[in-house]
Every structure is written in C-alpha cells, then in structure tokens.
Length: 357
Image (cartoon, rainbow, N blue to C red; front, side, top):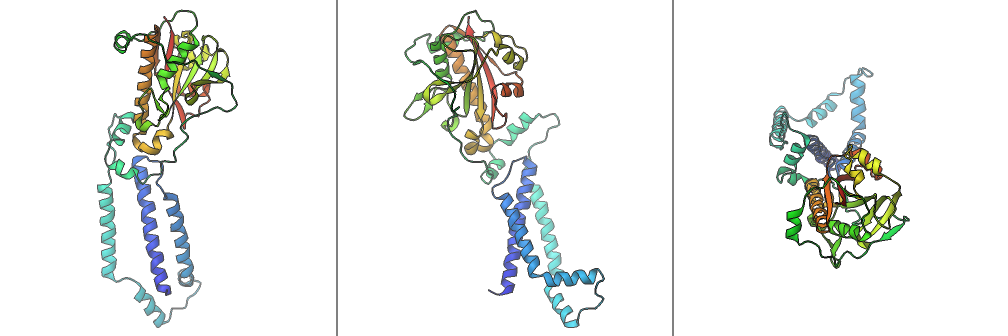
C-alpha cells in the first residue's frame, strides 16, 4: 500500500470518528443523556489518527511553522511551491465543500429532535415527553445502558429469620377487600403476628410461580426492580429494627436493631402514624434491573410496579382486618440514609404503614 493510500485512509478515519464524536456529543447535550456506546473510544481513535497524520506530515508542518514564525526567510523553490499548490483543493472545490458543510450543519440542527420546552414545565413533564416512543427510542439503541444486574439482593453474613408459610389463610374475598379498602392512619396497640407479616410480604413481592420466578405483583419484563424493607416496631418474635425481605427464601435479613419510630417519623416529615404503626414497609428500586432493557421507559415502569405492590399490601392488610396507609411524602436522603442506600443505584420510592385497627 502506497503512502498516499495510507494518508487517505487516515483522513477518512478522522472524518468518521470526528463525526461520530461530534454527533453523539450534540445529541447527549440536547437530550441530557448519559453516554453513547463507544463515544469515548471514538474520541481516542480520532486523537490517535490525528497524531499519526501529524507524524506523517511532520516535515511539512515544521517547515510551515518556521516560515510563519520568521525563523527561515528563505522562500521555497518554485518546483516545491508548485507541488504544494497541486495538493490544495481548487477554489470551486473549496466552495462546494464549504457549502455542503454549512448545509449539513443546518440540516442537523433542523432535523435533530428536541424535547419540548415549556416555560412552566417541571422535570416530570419533561421526562414524560422525552420517554415517549419516537425519536428518542430510535437513538436509545446506540446508548450504553449498562449490563443486567443480579436479580436478587442479599446481605451476606447477617442474621436471617425464616417466615411462616403465607399460604392457607382465607380472609375477605377480593371483591370484599376492594370495597372495604381505605387508608387507615390510626392504629391500635399490640403486636402483629409473624404470620401476618409473612402474608403481607408475600402479597407485596412474594414468589407465586416458583418454576418461573413470577411474583405476586406484575413487573415489566418480569425484571422485578423493587426491594422491600421492613421497619419493625411491634411484631411478635422479631426485635425492633430494619429487615430486608429476601425474596427467594421468603425470609427476613436483619440489617439493624433498635427502636426507629422517631427516625422514620422524622424521615416521613413528621407523620406520626409512621411511628405508631406496627410495621412500615419501605419499597426501594434498583433502577438498573429495568434500565438495561427498557432504557428511557424504565423509570415509568418502576413507579407503576411500586403502585401495584402498594395496592397488594392494602388488599392483603384489609383482608386480615389490618389497616394500611401509603406515604409518598418523605425526605428521600434521610430515608435512604436510614436504610443505608446510596440514593442513586438504589433509592426509596414508597412507604406503607401497616398496623392493627
């Protein structure tokens, strides 16, 4: 392969890698996306090719700089000057190149979809518009959404409490539970039984089809991003504290021991029922479990699933003669800290207080 061929290949590589870096960077800026697949590597390729191109033309570059900086006042020989002129594009080609560049930039700016801008819109509205199927979905295939994480969260080395079999209880029918369901904010003294807590957790997020891993609440793609934590105030056979529901074993993992009524009430912006209830179920989400597959729609699906679980808890509690109240108003950072969650990879979404009535 001749040197001229190598130079043209380098120039082609520079154009392609530079175009990819510039285009993906523009789209990321317009849509507030995280990063495109191979975006950084394309930048490295561009820099490497530019360095190689500079090395191949180092003599010409240094000669040009010497002339421009006045270090050499010698004028190039006529034959050298003629060869340099032959390498330059003609005026017509320069005009065509400039026109096409300007037209391409104009079309890119006009045709690149932009999220709607509302003067009074909040971020929720913007996200809702951005996550609709359409132009953003066409771009999402090129984005790096990360790998699929583990399906179950575990706390190695902590004490575990096996829960009783939740099956066999027959309370109100579904129709009766729906009619009787209300948000109950006042609770009677006394403790819940471990059997009652077992039924609540099974209704919330328990496995109902062991052979396929399906659970009690619907989940987009059966990915199940929701984790369930139990803040125990009064449950028979359990110490007060924080527990994690270990789904595959239908067991509790003891994370922290202590009276946390004041802490959860403070995180719940002073809602005293959170400290008066016998238990508070806290739903969190590990976002990557859904994000890797459903991309920009993931957050929608995760919130829907939290709602499904909340209604299951309501109906299970009502069927057992208990009261439940879902809470969405809480201090996120404080509640995440209480559960030792980072608030980014995993964050709290929902609190459901359950108690005796």
